[in-house]
Length: 505
Image 1 (cartoon, one colour):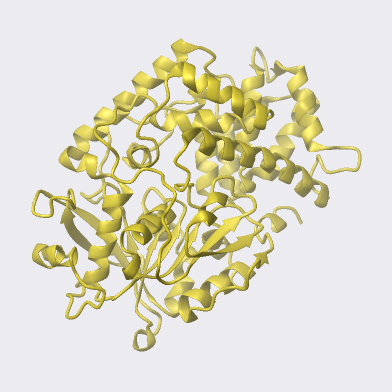
Image 2 (image 1 turned 180 degrees about the horizontal axis):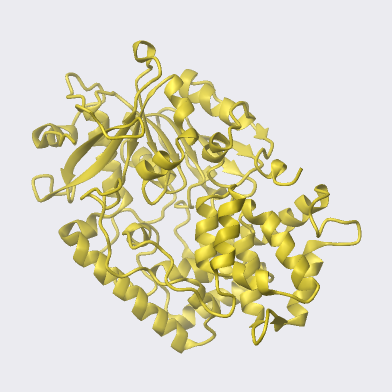
């Protein structure tokens, strides 16, 4: 792999929008049809002449190089964008009809075997522990284990640890833009990749080109309590969307005329503790966590079966769904039912699972961007009381999952890019995809200068439709028309749910 010149990158930080003579990376084949390079950047862009770190790049060449429209930079929001595309290239490969697609890793993450990928010695603990904890002792125990994860990441990353922020990543993207010789950044960001795109828009509005952002967590709400309440309401709405979906599909065991999935949940709650095999039971907290986990759209058939079996007296499968290991594995393969099934069978319904998150620095990045200060135990209980008022069935659980990300992690200094209401901006209009089944992305529509494209699926819909060989969908057609031609969808355009429609015949 080729390390790009440090001198050129220093110039990139101050490059004008019309970059002339920028050095295009010399890509090297690295398998799976990709060409790879590394980008050397300052650990801290506020000190551009200080220590440096590297980020991984990979290029999917345009199908017709003679007619390529230029570079499209992509971050899928995965733990590793390059590894995710290696495993499932269909998510973005159609974009090579028009562009040279450049996959960019955020600092601290990287391709398989890359020295750029920081490996933490201690895995982040399973947030389910905090969901099930009913007192201060469980809160403190979880905080200690999460602090151990944080210390191990800091030790592994060294000076680069404090630079794990979207503020720094946005500057990395601008350096990449300059190296590619593009006057404006053309960008596709899904999930957390949308956060990097939003940071770039705020910091470099005059260098922002066409951007499609989808499924990003809400960085536009500075008040943590309000942000948690919005997420809780979104998760609660998901339960009713699941009920409505079940009613429309004959294969759903909770979809007959006399069955209401929400009423089934309420009845199960009244019956807790539920029998889940010899010597095992499901408490009301674990029931809420299990259904909350199963509300990821790709898991709806599994959730329907588990709730149906619990209604008949066997909550074993439902208990297993509460495992965060199952939840994470299922979300990583949202529409791959076999992967979800295997994860469920591996989960232990009577115990909190072993730490499930991969030992990467992605958890630290989220905390640096979104939660510079974690509320104390009593203050959070007051917040949780409010969450139970606005989302009394399952939505309130999301508050504990969010706090679990950062509980116990000490913060040093003021955050470089805390959640904020973006100021009005001047520049190209960007396109933001928001799914009706995406509980966290709806406020992203508050980004100034954005046109919202609504659709009926969940997060990462564009990528998942590509993986599912759903190429000519309403969503993908609009995204392509915008990225290629600059044509924005008409106001109030809403695409149907293409993924959930096929989960039952």
